[in-house]
Image (cartoon, rainbow, N blue to C red; front, side, top):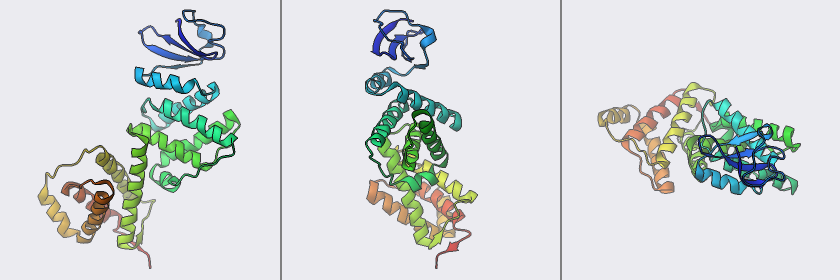
Length: 280
């Protein structure tokens, strides 16, 4: 391969055998080189093959970011993919690299940000939060910097965001929505929920997909009204609780719930409130 563009001494842009643009990282790979020069393959430590749009944005970011921060972010992303067993939106290379660089800058300036959603992230996105904890430890090992626990939560949100492939604000709004819906159930029935139970895990999973559908406007159609009528008759209190959730979602986000969505929620709420731990 030949150098097409030099970002800095350690980062160059080239074109692979499939005629696709790639970003190459390696110590001294661009040192005293010019466009058109052959690339020493032995110096290539990391290759990024991204879409043209993401490549353009990634190049803008890495011009301003130390190479070691780019490598650390890439290593964390690789671990996340392995741990989750799935691909992530490629834009995470831009978002997480930028975030880690900014987090390090804040640390060096003695600035510490609080994460208002840390409690929710730990409970709603436990797997991603564990990856965030790994990332904080990895940064400590590689960069000799001890970031606060809040950063594990921030990094977890970036992972969630990349799984869903939605804007970060949408991920934040979904997390807040899930937290509020669970709070409504607790307050309506005056109970605590057993977060270790299988029914709670199922409920939480349903709420994640439910909120995702709402923000993507992928609503369930009302296809089985007879089932809805049966559920409303059998579980009137649970259905009334869902009515409060419906009112909250409409007042906060301007979204209307279909009867089918309300039916599904009613059944899940019945499951998690079956064994009630009432608050006196």
